Amino acid sequence: MGEPRLIDRHRAVLPSWMALFYDDPIEIVHGHGRRVTDSNGKTYLDFFAGILTNAIGYDVAEISDAVRKQLDTGILHTSTLYLIRSQVELAERIARLSGIPDAKVFFTNSGTEANETALMLATQYRRSNQVLALRNSYHGRAFATVGVTGNRGWSASSLSPVKVSYVHGGYRYRSPFAALSDADYIAACTDDLRDVLQTGTSGDVACMIAEPIQGVGGFSLPPDGLFGSFAEVLAEHGILFISDEVQTGWGRTGGDFWGIQAHGVTPDLMTFAKGLGNGLAIGGVVARGEIMDSLGASSISTFGGNPVSTVGARAVLDYLLDHDLQANAATLGAKLIDGLRAVAAKHPVVGDVRGKGLMVGIELVEPGGMTPSPAAAMTVLEETRRHGLLVGKGGLHNNVIRLAPPMTLTAEELAEALDILAAAVAAADGTTRDGAK
Ligand SMILES: Cc1ncc(COP(=O)(O)O)c(C=O)c1O
Image 1 (tube, rainbow, N blue to C red):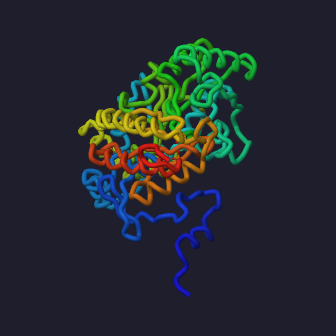
Image 2: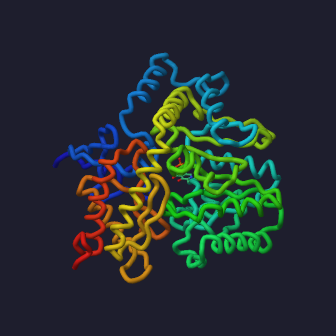
Image 3: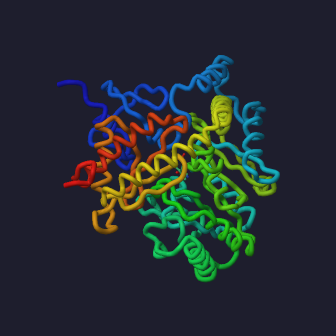
């Protein structure tokens, strides 16, 4: 009898609904740059970055040094009862970067808490519990955030403090309006929004919450301008707009620092998490001051904005801006999409390649149609791993491969990943890399 395997110990004490990737899940024990090593000594190029969280990559001296310096003070935590210099400075920077006028920031430990806070602020400010969300959305794992999550696979409960109405728009590939031009698609979704307001609500809606690019939903995105068009309708009714930037923030989408900027909208509130800490637990809300200050009771997050996470996040922001990683995401992201479209042209198992910057999805289908193929996605996941590349998987039908490497990616690493992806896609439709049987 040997030692029990880690996977068996995991299954014995951790919840069954916390899914693991791979038939034979891996334990990552070391990382540097964009590469990680597992407990068997196999090294991988990482194109999922801990679900878009290791935005800069692994073992980044500037971030480690900043955190180490804080540890050396002996202070890991003080609580928000006392002034925290790094928290104030980080809030000042995020307020400025947000473009939201008179902005204030509240720090949390996760994206879920950030969205819960934003929903509480909007519903209190507007004195209404009615919320609009998008089909195929994902906003978190607590009651209000599950309540605005439009994906059966992530909806564990129907209990919700908000009354939600879902609108079309985020997932174009399988939308009833998919065949329309960009302008007509935007017009159709905006008409649907007006219709939902008339038929699904009792008038005083508090807010709309939306991801500029749906993350869990398979990196699906509407044409630029959709949320600008929505915002005009929302403004007619005084409805607030919350942009969930948990996946799309900090320049990942390349063209813009926030995903929502592609739509020509300044939201009333934005939420963020994941990439800001490069692995440290930090999230938050940035909102117009009068909205942020509208809570009529005290509220704190014990750990939110603690000295370690805010010192680390400050170093992450410095790194992002000093190295212009947004520009790198734009340049390499465009190459990634071009390379994948060339692969797709040879392999009908690829139904759609989409995304922006370093946030790119490959939707896999039964060749010859649009039927989702989760089996093909599983093959790509396992094959890429076999060849030393970690990728993500998701989408409403679990048939989308998600690519989101650290934003420090190099052109050589991109070429390496494209080569592995081409081989994995070929394996998924049982052809050679040229598409021949
Ligand atoms: C868009 C979006 N919002 C919110 C969340 C929830 O964040 P967390 O898992 O940190 O609670 C996620 C997590 O994947 C997300 O992708």
